[in-house]
Amino acid sequence: MKFPTTYKCLNQNEFKKDNYKIVPLRYEDRVDIMQWRNEQMYHLRQADPLTKESQENYFKNTVASLFESEKPEQLLFSYLKDDVCIGYGGLVHISVLEECAEVSFIMETTLEKNEFELHWSNFLKLIGRVAFQELKLKKVFTYAYNLRPHLYAVLEKNKFSLKSTLKNEIKIEGREIDVLIHERINPYYLLQIREGNIEDVQLIYNWSNDPVVRSQSFNEEPIVFENHKKWFEGKLKNKYSLLLIVEFEGKPAGLIRFEVVKEQATIGILIGQDFRGKGLASDMLIKSSQFYFSKFDKPIWAYIKESNFASIRSFSIAGYEFSHNTVVNETPTLVYKFQEQ
Image 1 (cartoon, rainbow, N blue to C red):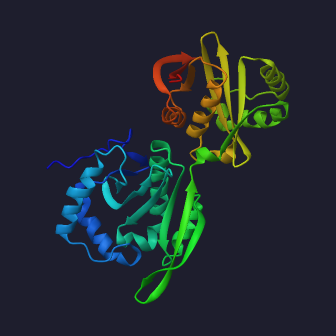
Image 2 (tube, helix red, strand yellow; image 1 turned 90 degrees about the vertical axis):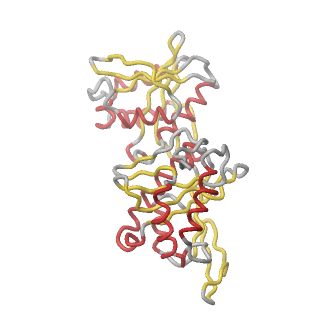
Image 3 (cartoon, rainbow, N blue to C red; image 1 turned 60 degrees about the vertical axis):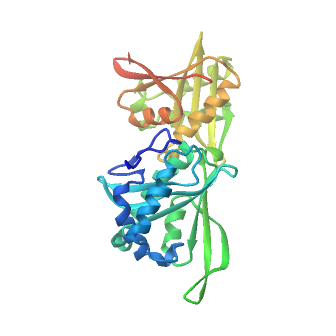
């Protein structure tokens, strides 16, 4: 049989971070995975060593069936460095009803000692994109025997928090062992939208004058506060302007601005320095676009510098589709469009 390579339930099947990536579980990695699992049985829910025959049957009968399922109970991935498999894991016990899944991951045994945090952190970021951006789950969690305390610090660094401790949950070699459950909430559900007001004038001025923001703007010149204040007051009074403050966990994190002109609106996004690199941009765009469509029905157009790869990716994840190329202020620009379905 030809082993499948893409999951039917996902729009995207490859997720990258630097020279690391996850791809749907590869048939060619089955023997390495068997070896790692057998070497690390002490912390896995695995009673007996795997054999080549049992692993072959598992891949052909269980794993292969996941690829065609619209609602699989698990999604498994090979974790690669420069296209070489050095680990595997995924989302297991996926619950459509509860909108959650358990995260599972193991790496090549020789990497556990010196590269544990690196690979766990990489994998959590990559599988988070599957869980939150592709499947739109509300939360993910880990279920871990209390045998590797160094794991918990890595989880906490990656925005997981201890949800519960199951005392004396399992018995290993005569010892009663606790199970710790950590969870992470989808950042989308931690975002709140409110309309801007005059008290936000200084905050938005600070964001707008940030050197990183200016470098990605079509007008890169620093902004004079008095000019900004006059502009901001005018936008608040204009019924065709919509200034939305996005708050993350109760703190102002960014601004999404809509300008409605005739039969369309243009969108702009600013993210505060403290909230960059947290993967919030696409969720901010999704949530603010939903808010926009509660007030207007015109399609939204985004004008993005051709060199602004992060913004292009965020708008694409948020459902904006490439429309055409143009030039703004002598700068090559990509135009993306979003229209309410």
